[in-house]
Image 1 (cartoon, rainbow, N blue to C red):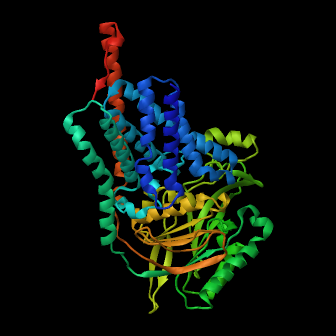
Image 2: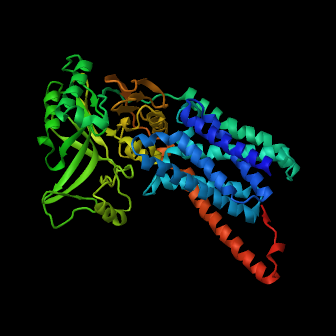
Image 3: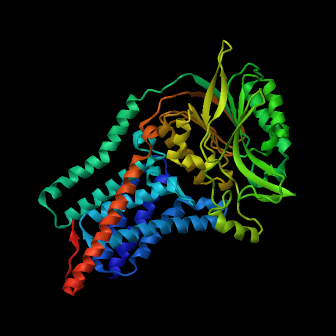
Length: 555
């Protein structure tokens, strides 16, 4: 028994290490294709040995994986990091528990298919519907730093990668079982090695084909200047005033443009650059007025920036929104916004809607807002926009003509949600501009992982992306998910380049996440099948009077 437990612990640790490597080491996504095999072996050994409390070992594996890849969240919030690691691992553990319960009733490969389908359905729920979601470790994200391997995400999205991971791991596991004498039909035993090789090799081959035959779509190039002002968010207002920060930003733009008053393009500043924007009178804000003065010297330019914005309501008796806070004799509603302006003085505003739980969002507000009020208002209460919208940039050509370019602006955390980002393209976005502030995590793997997710969004939508990060890494990403140019971490600098504009749509944009949808449907069918097994078993028990004589279904 001691030797068995040692083998189990080795398998648990191997799986945690293998599954962490793709998020920590560039170009190592292939580890995910076999990273769950040791875990499947450990579960199989524990099942055969009839070991109790083996689920706790499985849960520990998920805790180690989550902690090794997302420990950096503690730099922003220790409590949030602990909760994210334990709660996300618990949900993974619950899925595994359901798999183990199903396996007690059904033998063969079907429980493993159920495991894969249920896991991907959970990821679909995380990415689309969950009030509290942390989809950082969606299995398809394992290839975010191995983008040449998953060019077919333009068809399936990142959950296609999750399906690949599970299919490869289960295939390898069953091939190993066939080599250890597992009873199975001879033709299956002979076919398993070829099947496993095809499962692993075909997606690589398909991606290589797409990569080498891909032609960048361009309806013209848009010049961009991305400013990385490099303000420490923990000292943002103690180190310098907002007026001083604005002066730094504009000086970066002036230096990049080298006094070229005829420059025509888009200037981009990071998320929450300023906090002095009141939506009922945007033009009166000091930062906005400074931007307008600057743009008059560059009349062909537009400026996209992030801002903490506010709606003020004067009626103290009528609360305008459940997340509103008291403000003087009225109420204030907060937003994390992206704003695009030009010399016309207009302001296109988009409010971030995929908000970070705790720091920006109070989930289930009917329950938690009264609790938060009693605690003194410690949770964030940003209000997001109900529907995706783009902002408009007026692009001028050399002859003085102009056209309206729709720009999709995923704000920070929103760039993690693949199908959500397709909404910008459906609304007409011909490029994406990700604005973010990753400095809260410090010099950790966090900002690198976040950057890599933008590469996946570029593949899924086939849109060029201009990414602006307060402290880095800012980058220009092409339609194949390749980083064409980038800045360093914790540097005050600008990045100048061009992005191609495109109107074509990918299969994933047009049809959405069909892999996730299929897995949701299959999960419901499995649940129905499971209920049928339970009811049938009860009838057999009542008829036979001895449940021990009723065998498991072999499927």
